[in-house]
Each structure stands twice: as structure tokens, then as C-alpha cells.
Length: 78
Image (cartoon, rainbow, N blue to C red; front, side, top):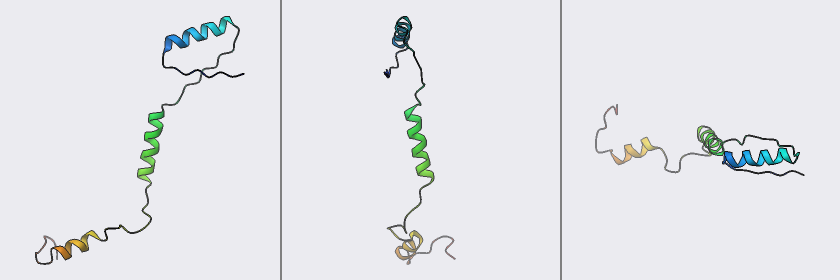
């Protein structure tokens, strides 16, 4: 039989381990990975590896700007 006990309270864990030793129960401790760090790493990877599936829905920004400001000269337009 396997029993999993999770807590952040070190005192409680120490008491449970002491009791288990008195009862001749085998205790295996495993460190739980920090879930926040895992989620942040996954989010970072998904952002860095993002690939658009098609052209942007708003079109070409430079072309829009030329149309909207065709009556004015833009710096470095030539």
C-alpha cells in the first residue's frame, strides 16, 4: 500500500516520519518540483516559439500608413 502526504509544514513531516519509524514503516521522500517555475518555463517557451498561422488580420502596417498619410510627407519616405 502507498500513502502520499503533502504539506509545507516541516514540523508535521518530522512528526510523521518519527511515527513511521516507530511503526517500522518505510518512508520515501521526494521533492516536488516548483509548479510555478514549471508553468513560467512552459509559458516562456510557448511565447518564444510562437509561429503565426497566416498573415496578420490588420494587413500591412506600412501600406496602411502610406494610405492614411498620403497627403503628408513622412520622414525618410524616399
